[in-house]
Length: 269
Image 1 (cartoon, rainbow, N blue to C red):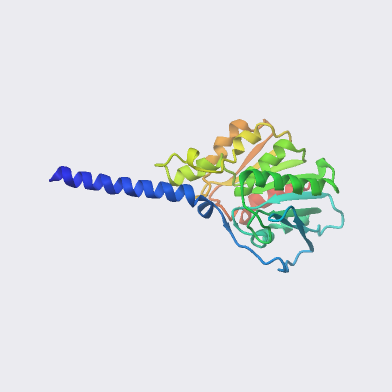
Image 2 (image 1 turned 90 degrees about the vertical axis):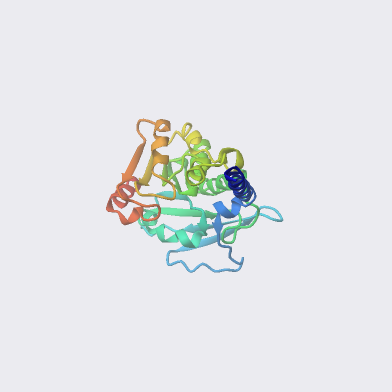
């Protein structure tokens, strides 16, 4: 009787495990990405001066960017800002003044399916669109006036771009070692490295970044754990730095004076 009961339990455990694995494999885009789409005629109502740019790439893909103008009397350069996995540009526009007040324009893209950008999201397309944004920036600014900034999901994209293009500095806010390492924390029972369509190996790209690198990460970040940045340390140059925000979480680092003062220092150099 006990053997039958044990077999029944094992059967249910196997069913749940397999069902969960199938769901992860086929529904991973819905699990990983949380975009909010906007109509193409949507007008952004940002308080900052800005220009809305849409670039049709083919019959299915349209890259949408917003170029935020510097609020300083003199423009020093441009920040290419790669945002996180939720909503769209509107959600991240609140961070723009941290850059524009120092004389930097900010060029922020929406990924495929986010905001007014259209098309199917793939890892390769993320890299290609980042490169397109860089080319737009480079038409107006020299490489030593371009800062590449990534937040959360955008950190791996930013690192990949900085590994192939020259820039003044690479800044990463709450980066991950790679995508599988983040998902593995939540689903340790699955071989996620072989199940995910997205790898985005930040650690690999950092090894060939020539520009100075600054990382911001909070010790209480439960979305992308602080240990991810600690794992990236062996791949940083001697002059690179990890700025540890004690008690900082995933989305509140710039409520800490330490973060704001450090960013101010980097942008005023």
